[in-house]
Image 1 (tube, rainbow, N blue to C red):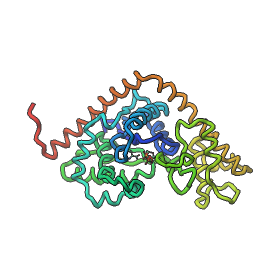
Image 2: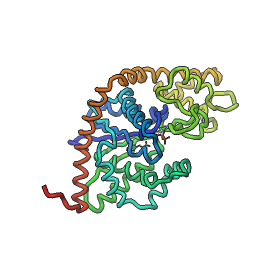
Image 3: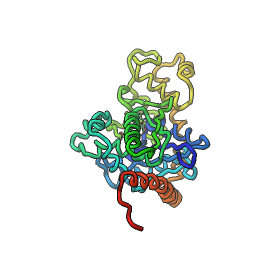
Image 4: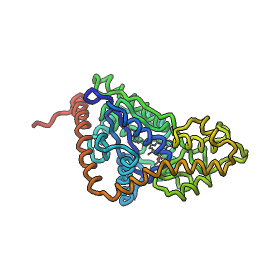
Length: 336
Ligand code: ATP
Ligand code: LTN
């Protein structure tokens, strides 16, 4: 809670170009939620998290700025919501250190994202990757967030955040709000177009596996045409047909239709026609966002102003919590 209002916080890592999965599973839900009156919303460009995987500095800088522009282009109003860079608010790293000392190795060892990423980056299994969820807990707890909308894959990190908050509160009294996770109904888990058993991920090396938010129409249509399905040749929404189910999920998330409505639209179609229909729904969904993005990309001064003002706003709230935590833990205050 901040000033008696419910607080929501979420964010994405500034790594690579965000995908349709990130958009439908996270960003689009944020936009809907941020339109609700009476909620304070914070959205982070989580760049400290990004360096758990090696980044090229020039590309990293570009990606982070691009992510801010995509947040705004998708419909997050930076004057009403606080959209900030994690690295602009030092309190994140500071609280993460403190919370590290209230988190157990065994807890981190259970995290599936760590296991997945460690397997993927076997040459760089750094301790940042291991304690990644603690930094995420700091992000959330600093703003006393009540609600954290994320894709399904992040729920485990949300659970650990709640455990850390409860543990800390158990020792020192009510310091942190214990947050609730929120997974949107639609687009909770969009799968790879190349392998429908794997989630669509921005770090997938196969360019055909993911739709990127700035892909043009031809690219989108081509990728859908190539999407892996099955050889049954009939359209149905079932666990046995993960490729087709994924296409239907994408269609529903883009058109706000139910599965039944979608199946009615696809009645009598073959796979080729289905793919074309889904591709068009995605093109229509992304077109306005892409047009706004192009406008924003030209307006450097505006983006710079947003960055600066929101870093100050985020710091104000984050420092308030951090001061409280330090006092509770027993750090010696610097004499004024
Ligand atoms: P990376 O490939 O770099 O690990 P990612 O594509 O998995 O990245 P994240 O930055 O980890 O994306 O996640 C950003 C947000 O998007 C999170 O809320 C996450 O739950 C959501 N998300 C990521 N992938 C998907 C997906 N395929 N379907 C639905 N939501 C997703
Ligand atoms: N780990 C998240 C990104 C993230 C986040 C957060 C999400 C970092 N800090 C705080 C919600 C709240 C991910 O999406 N991969």
